[in-house]
Amino acid sequence: MSNKGADLDDVLVVHGGTPLEGEVQVRGAKNLVSKAMVAALLGTSSSTLKSVPRISDVDIVTGLLRVHGVEVELNGDTLYMDPSHVESAGTEEINVHAGSSRIPILFCGPLLHRLGKAFIPDLGGCNIGGRPIDYHIEALRKFGAVVDKTDKGMHLSAPQRLKGIQYELDYPSVGATEQILLTAVLAEGTTELRNAAIEPEIIDLICVLQQMGAIIQVHTNRVIEIVGVDELHGYSHRAVPDRIEAASWASAALATGGNVFVKGARQADMMTFLNVFRSIGGAYEVDDDPIEGGIRFWHPGGDLSPVALETNVHPGLMTDWQQPIVVALTQANGLSIMHETVYESRFGYTSELSQMGANIELYSQCLGGSHCRWGRRNFLHSAVIAGPTKLHGTDIQIPDLRAGFSHLIAALAAEGTSRIYGVDKFITRGYEDFETKLRGLGAHIVRPGTEEE
Ligand code: EPZ
Image 1 (cartoon, rainbow, N blue to C red):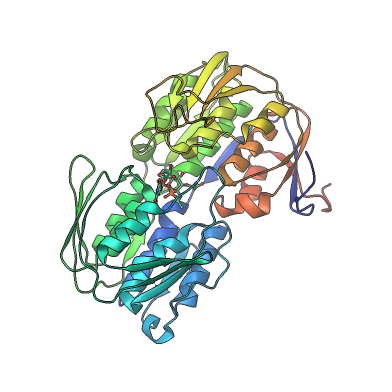
Image 2: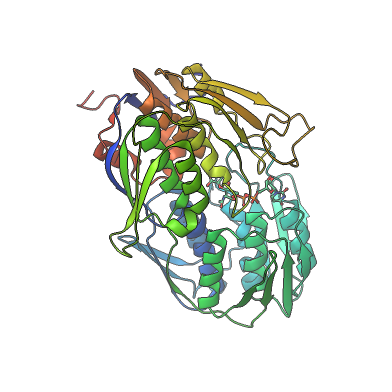
């Protein structure tokens, strides 16, 4: 690894080769919690969000809400948000450093409704493809917003109350669906959104909005109908559990030959992952107790089987499950295929896996499944993984959140020592207390400079 650009203090030393065993708890999904926090801005009274994880994306959105006059307080895992002073704060500009979060763009609709204007700086986000925002801008313009793009960001204004729209997404984008929901709920008249994303986190956001007084109907065939109302109030809601974190621990159990009970994981949201986990040769058991329940994942011994998979929008295999599954597939006996159809460039992390001894080849063709948007466009979006391969420790500068956690899983499965740079910058964005959890599972990890070293 080149140390160029690496923060040398932001490093975790992993002594691999120990099966992970024990219990971890997952709280609310990062990709719902952050959106439900934005939704609180639409209400005239206070909201309460439960099962909030302590992750840096929550801190970022807390900062963004406070800038707009929302009082935010975290007590345990319950977040209180009081938006009654948004108009008097009058801040239309997001002037908090949002790091690599893409949440600022979802402030457009709520700020336009409350203040009539907004300024959204250029967005961050994981480096996994172009990540355009054309659907967001097109839909906001249709609602009646005036959007002026500059090289620093977007100035928006609503000369009059926004009006409901008929809109069809070219692709069922999660963020664009949320943008339209958060804008349509207070727009005048009805909005019909076709080809909408219907991920569990979106359905949970709809539950939040419904509690606030919104009228939203999810029809068959990805059609969502929103009848605009004049006012919304606060909500009290428990966030849907984080199915990406749950699948990450499950994959770590499989890759290290371990046994992990993921408390809080919910079967209904993970059905596609569970099918894949079982097809590879992993075992799991569901405990559906609403408080103490979760899913136990373990490696039952014997060979793991190769599989051909492709990522897709819900109810397909989540793109954020792809990376941890690929790490587990390096231990399967034969050739596996992973076709990534959501993002064009989400295999960058495999070069570090290859450096650790994995045998992974990337292809621009659509392998092992249907033709997707990235075929014939020179994007290396299909991977062939030949296993099983012995992984060995190495030094890694992690490139983004999900890739980073997968590098961590690979380092835990590998023989020898790895130094993982960038854990504070990236992994804390989406994994609460991951070091404590890893230690609880018996992982040998060390922060250089501490007594344990
Ligand atoms: C959300 O990103 C998640 N992020 C991602 O998780 C997740 O991978 C993704 O949904 C898919 O499930 C958050 O919820 C904060 P999209 P989002 O809009 O909303 C294209 C993580 O690590 N597109 O559904 O930004 C886009 O390029 C993150 O937790 C357009 O073309 O994803 C992509 O190919 C990483 N134009 C596809 O749609 C647009 O205007 C899906 O993106 C918008 C999107």
